[in-house]
Amino acid sequence: MPSLRAAALTDIGRVRRQNEDRFLHDESAGLFGVADGVGGLPGGAEAAQHAIDVVAAGIRQTPAGQLPDLTAIVLKTNTSVAELGQRISPAMGIGTTLTFGQIVGDTLRIAHIGDSRCYGWRRGEFRRLTEDHSVENEARLRRARGEVVYYHEANRNALTRCIGQPTPPEVDLVPRQIAVGDRYLFCTDGVTRMIPDSELATMVGQNGEPAAVLKEIIALAVRRGGPDNATGVIVFIDAV
Image (cartoon, rainbow, N blue to C red; front, side, top):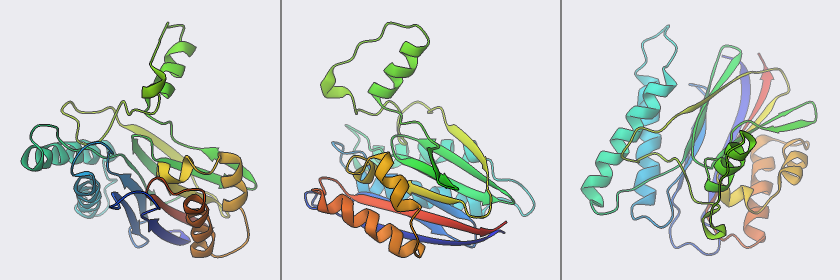
């Protein structure tokens, strides 16, 4: 296991009555990530917590020496959350985003569904490593392929994929070879809608311990109105 330092933090924000975000922060397993219960549906907190629990169990139950099958774990999580939704909200179901990564050897293996994000910082270069599964983003990608796509502006941020949907979602897998000095940020849209990528780049790359850097990021999202729960997990790679 590489040498790393990590921190996790969540804030309910200034508007929501309940925090429906959850996070993964397990340094011994190299496992980090976030889940954001889908707003507008009942049981968002339950969906996010259940997703986190099923993923953590799936990683733990992988036999020693084997590489976890992240796609299988995510699809199992989707089925389990959908079944929970049938019990607690049979009319509407429940849903959550899920973006997590596990460091195995010199590779960060990311699995992603929804519009929570993972960013990577390396020697001053800041990159978004995941693509939002939103109506606006999917339309942009389809237009780039030459398709004619229209959508209503009111639906631009609506999710096109989530955990808990009736049909198994396509899972984005992103492998990233890590290097000494790398920093990774997993965060929900309560952060990214308040802080543009250019500002996040400066904040993630600043001097300081992971907990202090993350606290500043979450606090800024809340100071700017905190309309949603704001959650992040940050990882500093010290040695590989």
